[in-house]
Amino acid sequence: QSVLTQPPSVSGAPTQRVTISCSGSSSNIGDNAVNWYQQLPGKSPRLLIYYDDLLPSGVSDRFSGSKSGTSASLAISGLQSEDEADYYCAAWDGSLNGPVFGGGTKLTVL
Amino acid sequence: EVQLVESGGGLVQPGASLRLSCAASGFTFSSYVMHWVRQAPGKGLEYVSLISSVGGTTFYADSVKGRFTISRDNSKNTLFLQMASLRPEDTAVYYCTRGTGTVAGSRLDPWGQGVLVTVSS
Image 1: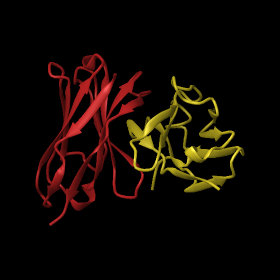
Image 2: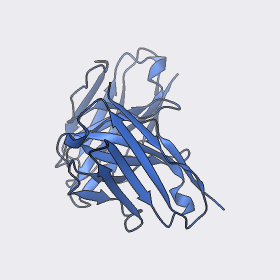
Image 3: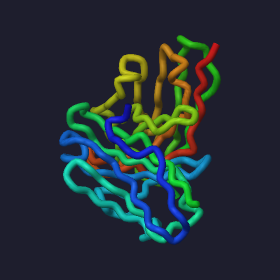
Image 4: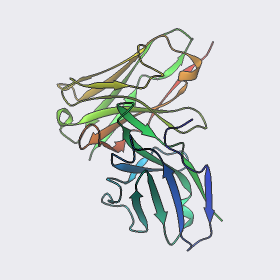
């Protein structure tokens, strides 16, 4: 059972917009930055969003992040087939005194 | 180009030990927090361990605490993970990754290609 809770799967048709939620608590999301990672099939994860809503260089602006209270969200607009991947949220947890990942969400592009 | 290359994985029996290495290049290794993250077959990412830039601060997930030891050799730009008393549930791909920012706010980028550790009799 992950400390951060994500839906196991989401899906959407090409060009649509989807969101992936990440629910935590005051000891993690509520008090620390949230980062998002994308893992394409058979590949290593890559940083997608950091400090809640910032995009690393080279990441498409179709990806966006937000946070409110103890929850965070990743939004993907203009869905493309190459977006099919697993997405993970992560944050530091002050109670555990260490970082934690969400369980991951598999995105299927219909 | 920033690069992280893991090595040292393989098939071992339960109770055995193994040491993973991660060779870093393309950046000032001694300035960064370094991390190990693992992924069991078909499962999600699981945080394993981190070490601060000069090695003074470490963190271990409860699942590996007391069995795994993280270390680094800044003179050789190399990160290590010494794994002892290995269990079948330690079977996973182990990724080395660089942390940027504070220890608590580290974003992990980039990630190595990963190395497979299989614990089985």
